Amino acid sequence: MMPVRPSFCRNLSLVLLLAGAPAGLSALQPAFAQASDPAVTQVQGFYDTLVAAMKMGGTPKARYDKLRPAVEKAFDLKAMTAMAVGPSFASMSDADKQALVDAFTRMTVANYAKNFDSYGGEKFPVEPQSIARGNDHFVKSKLVPASGDPIAFNYRMHQVDGTWKITDVYLAGNISQMAQKRSDFAGTLKSGGPQGLAKQINALADRELS
Image 1 (cartoon, one colour):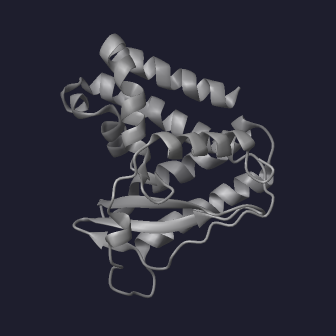
Image 2 (cartoon, rainbow, N blue to C red):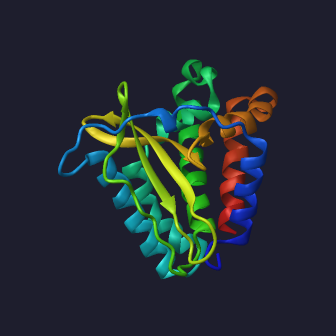
């Protein structure tokens, strides 16, 4: 990445140009202060593993293997898949749902493994208090490269069996990646159904790991 992959920066810039930024996060108020915010701890734990994988370097597959348990721990991948696919996910068969969750998981881990491929002094500061809105909490953080401007990475989270898990990632603080994925997936889902979409998502993961 030098210190972040140029392709990642270009892709992020394209997202920022093309995607609309829904309002809301800037108006949220911090949750009540507490000694250790479990939502923040979850995000920080993921970042710790991400930095360790970056420092490890090696192949995308090696980083994938290191990152997958951390991604599965920190992210609610089934909820994220449902959001990215859209309302039709609810009426799909269990087999189709599982195939899509499996493919989405592979793609998510592969994206991190590919884009965060080495360490050059990057930092991932996380604000110590999450922001509450209804049943969800938002955790605000940044990617601070060794040179260049910081990039906001904010996380929407909810509780799953008492554990805070990520359900969406907001680039530049406000651009929902699940909304972007739903737009990306819509054409394939319409033309190829769940099986066609799972095939496409797996192909995206394979490309990242090649």
